Image (cartoon, rainbow, N blue to C red; front, top):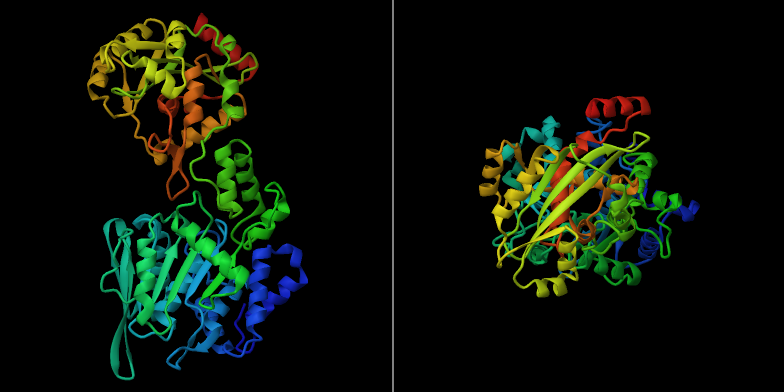
Length: 575
């Protein structure tokens, strides 16, 4: 859409909301109501030229750098124009009698895949090249350096893809071609200036010597410490019209920077008592039904542009499988803040896997072993994962486990964990080690005995405390593979375990596996990958960790067979 000088694009969005009010959440209708209220005020005024200069600049210089629209210039959607036009359009006289912007802080909250990256890129580009601020100091901040790259890299690409911008700008890169900063050098009225862009490498507690004119806080919900946000905000006081630009989805937990700023922004939206803040929040109305597709449409303003109903349906299927999946869907796709430390699996999911009557005889079958070692307080677990098929050829995963626990203080352990370890030992699920330490020789002898019963393909192990024992396994002729305990490594395994429980394809005879799986709390990296966290899980998850390590291999062997193929397979095994 070409930006016409005489058109008020904020007004166009307001008319759109008035025409179909049910299509918009109440939080956006409150933002519209606030805008209309401001238009009646005498102490501030609307500068349509300034508003449209910003919109025109973004659509002239900012390009998509990935996806289906890669290479094309940005075309702002009406809801985006409503935000940017207000930021740059509202003017007033400050305490010194100078004309300047009314708004100095933006809180813009939209679900994942709704164009947040381009919103941030557009704001950065205009602050660097299009605004009236000479000697601008511009910062890009996030929870960590990698997260900041999600905004910094597209911004750098915008510069490189425009000869007019690039010829006067130097981009600084770091390790792995990462973006560290940029300098734009220019002259104004015969005086040379430079605008500087910097990527903050971490959440530092002090912003020493900075004089920021623009700060982008990307994914504010992921930031845990308030010092960076507060110190940057304080450092802006000497600028005529600085901007703190916060853009985020909802997040997990109540201790993040994002939650505090969200609550403050909601208060401003309700009471209209702080002219310096622009608040734009796309979230469901009260008493919403997260299964209602109309709610999905209401809170995803870029539906049909950068996010599709098909992709939301896919994410919804994951949401239906577990409590973790539901919280992910709520936080990322419906923009709802949820509790941060919920367990990954639910009882309804996990308790049905305990089916000892269905284990049958596994002697001679291929299995993969997962090993999670401890020294004293944690459990040590050897997990045997058997990928098999039922009578109809449906792939199943049967799991046998043996736990090793120091005998010393077993009474305390039973009370603390609320687990009858001695009873489980009588049933053959637990072995006690004399004293207060795990006896690795005892584990070695157990695995040596397994070699006579099962066809052990491989041992997958958590490298922590495993080096000596692994060398002894390898001396027995067993192949051993280290499994790093990171979301990038275990994400597919975690997701597939969800699928197996949902489809009732996971079976065990050991109640301790049920206990450990129910205790799992997941951590998530910036790419949405998940892995189990012993630090955040308040109770023992060692059996779950051993199972997941083994499933890193068995996931490749979970294939359904047709009845004829199954019979051929059985004939081959038992011939």
